[in-house]
Image 1 (cartoon, helix red, strand yellow):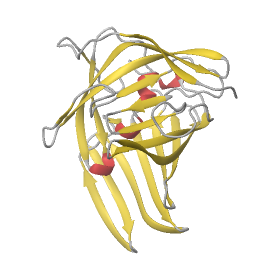
Image 2 (cartoon, one colour):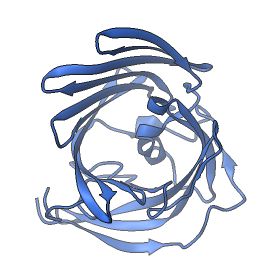
Image 3 (spheres, one colour):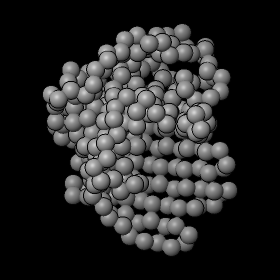
Length: 262
């Protein structure tokens, strides 16, 4: 593949507006049937002591199961040998999360395993750590987008002219959020000799349990998504997500290393 770079095209300097659309999962605003199967790899990094440090790679595979289910498998290989694998099953049309499985491996041995079943009123789960098994439950539900894979349902939406408010969860932290997503402009990413239009979506997270607010934008804790509504073969629907301390990107922009490496 040819060298790649991120080229700004247009960013509208707007904050999350007071006018907004409220979205309920399953109301038709998300159309997961737009998303096609893929298997691709991203770079990850985190800001430590004013420097961006390698956080390993993320491999993500999406599989369509029958007419009604999407399966997203993620494998994260971190420096130091830790490997984390997850599998999340979604309702294909709405991207409602239905089931999650997570496994952490260290030196070839299982360090932890958790499986969760989600319903409209919350989740139940079984966790295994250090040979001990426990049963858990929580408020994160199938009526909330999965915060760890939120770019995909955003990519399955049309460009929105006003901010959209919805519920999401970070189930690993047993946290739920009111999220406000705002489509603020476009970027072009050059990849393999092509100029690919991506939409820029800034997200604000409001923690429902403790009240913390994570402001929107790539230099704030809420972050920014880049989504490609019509990606060519070999290019992801969500090429980039960045906050003030974390980045995951298909084309190197923030993460250390050769920027045209792919």
